[in-house]
Image 1 (tube, rainbow over the protein chains, first blue to last red):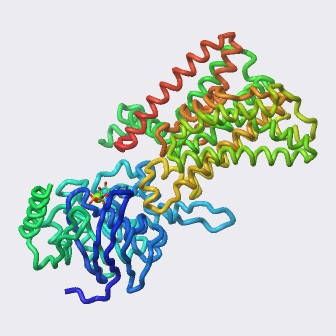
Image 2: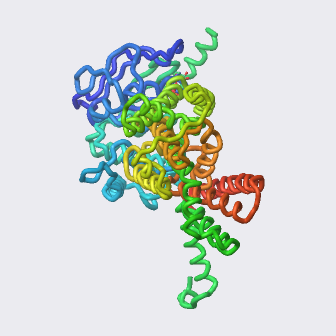
Length: 255
Length: 335
Ligand SMILES: Nc1ncnc2c1ncn2[C@@H]1O[C@H](COP(=O)(O)OP(=O)(O)O)[C@@H](O)[C@H]1O
Ligand SMILES: [Mg+2]
């Protein structure tokens, strides 16, 4: 069991979009070097939770603690200043820009000198190094991201987050847009990152077995609330299926 | 490839190799295809008409296309970030009047120019604000702004043209034959640099390519869009002032939808996508020159304006189709 200090805590987080309550009273903890898997149906509120942790949305109620200190994450930049990086479900990639431009999007390196001009050469070199560092293979960093496969795009997005000194890495459905072979490569990449021990991760996924395999703990979100939380070693996929089925039947009876 | 076939100059594979490199260049550098078209037109008109490549005619052509070349530079930035400004031709007519009345109120002419550009920028800011914060499509916002600004111009001017003031500044501001084209080229080069080599340019592409993604990366998408609306509007006003000094008259009916359409047409035939996320300022400048050369060449050859419109329309459609095809080739990484 991971006994490292907690890097991230969320207490009773709720988020309303107008009349819709996307999530309600969700709490979680994340220790340094730990990986938490989040499971749940489409529309359950998983992405909303992620976007609160990255400062993209602000919670309606509840509180967040980063390294034991209470914070209100007011923007993506603010969350980044705590080392919180997210690989969004839509990857936040710009298809019409090259790989290296995407890897430095909104943290561009500028040339020294009076004019604030982009240092393309430095960004290209650093992007190549960052990709190599975590073992990602793509034809060239000059290729437009739109020309890459789903798996390559995901790998570039992860490399981008890691290269920006992520301490807390949030992955929203990193295995969704790809086939089995590419998914295996991304899982291997995630496991390499985990083995380094300096990054804490939260991963949203759909595949129970896969998630139980890579995550230290798992959490189930249904209709905006947490319905299960447990250590992967003590949880089986069958158990999770059972929870989903029970919840589904309970709602059918009510509805 | 075997060494034998590679060693034979002119063999099928060597030829297809060169063919491939040329094709790759044209597909990769979106300015290249329109530049080729421009050169072909220059040569053709020179052959067909002895007066084409004369100093007098070149200065005519350059004065002809400079207004929409300047506007195209701003419009391309907007198109790349996923917006469009249809009202820029009305700012073109409005700004010189602001300049005139500021100067008439006793301020120096230079101050008049500055005030006119500031007011143009404010109009762009208002349009950008409405578009971004009320979520109105810029096509609609600026369609409304077209009428509104035209009304302002007519009210301010009383509907009558006035002469431009006599000033030494006039030569720089469009009076000298080549000053407009100098400004147009300078603005295109500067914005080309901004687009390719600054954060502003990169973020403009990002906002048009994937607005949500850009916001998730922490880019202030509203700021980028509003800034580009301001830029486009200021350039529209500036082009209007230059044009007024060039024709030595401030005309409430100058510019309008015509100059705006030509600017957008220049952008599109120069290789800028109407879908946002990609484009080239230099391509737009060359596109503007090509439209100017076409119009002038046809005039010299005695071909009428109706035919010109047919050709321009067809040129836009053809370039749209090739641009889409080239983008597909690039994405499939074939070329
Ligand atoms: N920006 C938003 N505005 C309004 N409703 C939203 C917004 N984002 C998410 N929602 C709603 O919140 C609920 C949860 O969505 P989401 O967090 O994306 O689910 P998941 O990622 O688990 O599929 C859905 O009903 C969705 O429609
Ligand atoms: Mg989601």
